[in-house]
Length: 482
Image (cartoon, rainbow, N blue to C red; front, top):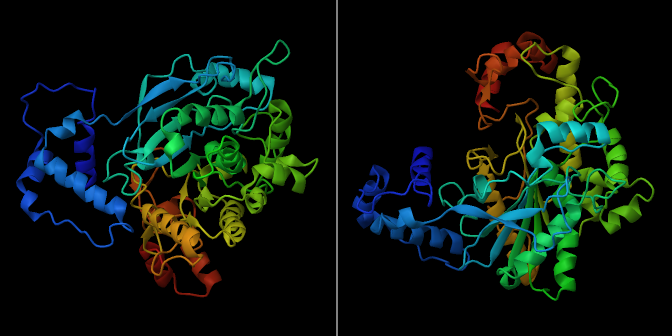
């Protein structure tokens, strides 16, 4: 289904615009209804292919009964935690959004991102400018999932039917803190406790019957997955739920503790070097790190906030999604791409960042790392379009699921033709032709790869000379993404 199809379907989400009962279904659904004869159901290997089969059944049902699409309610609803002592930064109750999917034993819990604050001054200013990231006082009653949180099979081919949980980020501590607000502490930092309390609440809403729990998150939430996936699994085991398989999906949370391009004083979140932020933050939040990582870096626990250092200490399977040229990483490294041509030193720094990141990922068995300049991915509606070596992320996650299933049965390597270790080898930002579109920040115009590189001050002649090739050949390679 095309994107316009997905948008057409989205207009039918329950509770938005109540339609008069006899309203004709939209053209999108009429078309579906008229072509029902051509639906073929694929019964082959249903067990291996259950999701795909269910998608076909759902599409068939919707095409036969177009009106039923109007009754489907895709929104997640807000619930506050039973345990009111676990709060957001300002002491308001923490909570989560839930959309149940009664027939499914798969649960997806998503941790929202949104940077952090690490001292009284920048937390005060965050409270003034981004209150929803520190307080639940103005949260809406419902939230619509997108990308991997979408309930539309065309936007989320592999997980649409799961129980969806979205935990808003209101602890500003990279999901690591465990300290309440007191007379001495202006703010509570309870990120790690919020996750545990949500899990406990969900056990009374069907999670106790789950087969798979995927803890996912983007940006600070992606780092939060690395810090919490083992403790979520351990909590469930302690509570007697040993049959729930816990896994992680960390998006855009694999940061490097590298040297900045230009060193600056640690005044605010944006300019402070990655290690410096975490060293200060972990003290201010009283941050908790996973036990095995804490033992590996005793006295230097800040190391555990960096993916390549914490990852080897994690026991549960984790899938890493990371743009090779992550905009948040470049920001903290003081590379600001604001339309000014990039100097040669910056350009080298950017390329080098891709190389360093690639090196830290080489031993990660399950990952998806496109050579794009971007940040966050799994909740974007284009998340099905980007490919690495001809494979999309939903497909790679499906392969990963299968390999985990088969490993638990008979310890085999991943199924043939189903890749899970996907990393671009081309060296420039956006050398992958399926990267999301870049827009010129000043004009809003879309740019192709060559325009983007010229815009960044990229010297094709010089680069071709360095690579020992003809400039026109290099341009051809750039535009084809090879």
